[in-house]
Length: 300
Image (cartoon, rainbow, N blue to C red; front, side, top):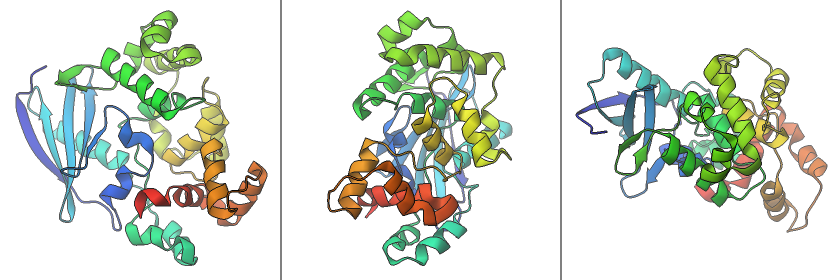
C-alpha cells in the first residue's frame, strides 16, 4: 500500500498527563503495531477506520498538546479525523480522571512520586478487541513469546501499509483461519482455539466488546463478563480490568510476587493472600497502587 496523503491533527491532553509515563506504563508499547522511538519521543500506531482504510499515526508531545502526523492512502474526511482523535484519546486514557487516585497518593510519602510525574494512565490498544487478543497472548508464557505471537498476528494477518508497518488484524481475518494454521504460523499453541472462537464471536456480532470502556457494569459484573471469554483466566481478566478503568484486582503473577518480595520483604517471598492484604487499604485503587509500586523503576 502506498501512502498518498498526510495530515497533522492535535489533541489537548488532560491535566497531569505525561507522555513518557504513559508509553512505559506497561508492556503494550512494546507490542505491534505500536512502536516507540526514543530518539524523537514518538509513538507509532495504526488505526483501522475500515477493512480497507488504514491510517499510520505518529504521535508526539508538542508543548501543551499532542501532535498526530497521519498518513493514509486517501484523504481523511472530517469524520475520519474525528474518529482518529477519539481512538487516540481513548487509547491514551484522556477520558479517565485520576484526581481521586492522586489525592490518595499524596497522603502517603512513598506514593507521592506518582502524581508528581503524572503517572497512572495505562496505555490501551486502538480497540478493546486488540487488548483482549494481546492479553490472551500474555498468559502462561514469557514476554518474548508474547511479542512473537503478536508480531506474527500483525505481520501475517494484518494489512501491509509500507516498510515493516502492518495493521492489527480485524476479527473476521483471524476468525477465517484454522486452528492448525494458527498453531503453526502464529505459534500460539493452546491459545489457538480460544483466539479463533473469540474472533468469530466478535466478527459475527454474537459478542460485543468495544462498549466495555464505557460500560455501567460494576467491577464484579465486568470481571464475570471477561471470564466468560474462553482463554481469559483470573490473571488476564484482572489485567484487562485495569485497561478498562477498574483497579479492584491485583492480578498477582510470578513477576509481581518477586517484585513485592524485593520492595517490601527484603527478598523474602510471601503468599498471594499477604500481598492482597497489603494493598486492601487502598480500596478500589489497590490494583493501580500495586502496579505503580512494582514498576517505579520504569519511571524514576
